Length: 249
Image (cartoon, rainbow, N blue to C red):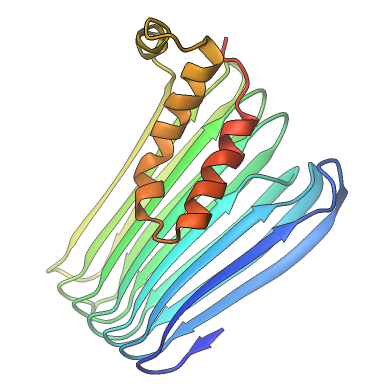
C-alpha cells in the first residue's frame, strides 16, 4: 500500500481460514509506504486454522512528518514466523506498533520486530502483549536500530507475557543497536502467571473462577485496546480472546 504525501487512511486487513482445524501453508508479505505528512492507521488480524503454517515478511517506510499506527493481532496458525520491519526514513516521522498474541494448544508464534531510525528527530513505540495457555509458545525478538545520522531519536519497545498454564513458554529478547550519541532508547519485558489474589478478589464479588480469569486477561490487554481507535476492531478482538480463555489451573 502506498499512501501519498498529505493523505490520511485507515485500512483493515484480515486473514482467516474457513474452519478452525484447517491446515496448509501460507507465505505472505505486507508493504506499507507512508508519504510525507501522511497518516495511516493499519490493522492486521490473523486467525488462520490450527493446522496452518504461516510465514510473513512485513515492512513499512514512513516519510517526513508522517505517522503510522500499526496494530497486529495473531490468534491462529499452528506455527507462525513473522519479520516486521519499520523504517523511519523522514525527519520527524512517528510510528506506533501494537501487537496482540494469544496462543493455545501447541501453537508457536514467533515475531521479530525492527524499529529502524534512519532520520533524526523520529519517534517509535512498539508494544507487544502475549497470553499463552496449554503447551503453546511465543518468541518475541525486538531491535531498535539507530543510524549515525539519526540524532534526537526517541525509541521504546516492550513485551509483556501472561502465562496461563505451567507448560507454556514465552521468550523475550529485546535489543538495541545505537550508532548515534544523542538519543533516548529504552526497552523492557515482563513475564508472569495470573495472580491468585486477583482471582480470589473477583470471586469474592460473585464471579466464577473462569469469569475472573477472563476479566484478568482482558485487563492485561487493555493497554493495547485503549490504543485502538477503531471501536469495532477493539470490541471484536476483546471478544475473540475472551472466548478462547479456559480455566486456569
